[in-house]
Length: 359
Image (cartoon, rainbow, N blue to C red; front, top):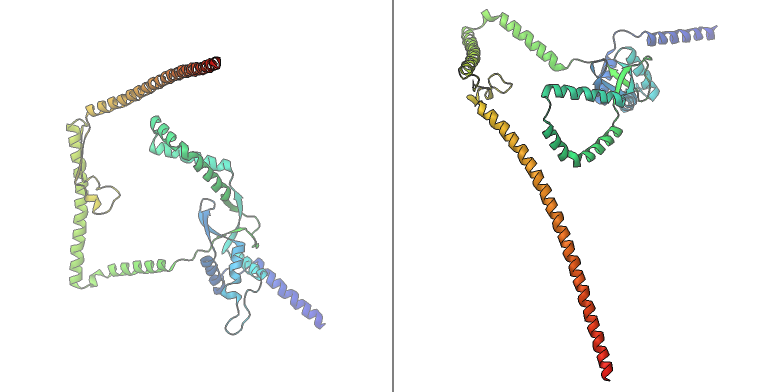
């Protein structure tokens, strides 16, 4: 009977444990929150996009390795048993954290080259629409200058592509924690302490403004003058912006679009406070003659380039003719040398014959 009762108690305890695992408590304990914070602070996290949201994820094996060296894997001051003794115990605990919605399991999907090429084409089209197309001459010059470096750059890009493989994440159907290279996306996002400080400051500022009638008279006068000064400065900026537009439009209409004058050209630009008031003005004169001169210059450049090509062709023809003439002269000189050597040899033979005859 005693053994049967013990078996029943063990089975009930197992059922409770299974129920806790399958249906964990909605609120995590302070220890679980502390462990989740420690994992997020110490385990390497990577950023990516998951279902059009920027998220952070970590690798399961790295988290298990870090927890093996964590404070929860060593004995306490009172020689208490550590929470984590083996990798299996860590996996069970992290599975519990997963069920309590601290993170969820994701599936790694390698991105194909076709998708990467399609994205690159889309980016190129957007850049062309925004910046406009370049001139053909400039593009050809850039290509000629970069031909020597293009081969090396392509080799480096191929090596980088082989080393780094792009991966995107998708939801995994089996939401369990597995000790491996699976990705786990963080859901737990604790609020930083400076958010609390900023919120407290906003609340105190609102209360202080509500208690404005109770402020000392000197402080109220100072705030009043400051508010008047700030309002006057804003009105001055708005008036200056309207004035500069009016001056530009009047001068542009009077000169039929030839003269462009801007007072404080950087006033509405995205620059610093002092840079927005410098330079004081910017003047441009756009004449029709200047545009004609530009077109003439471009035509002159084209003509000069054609003339240079013709000169190069003539020089190459002259060089070929001169090389032919040099070759003919060398052949003639070689023929003369041969005739001279033959005459010298015949003379020597004749002399030897004469000596023999004399003897």
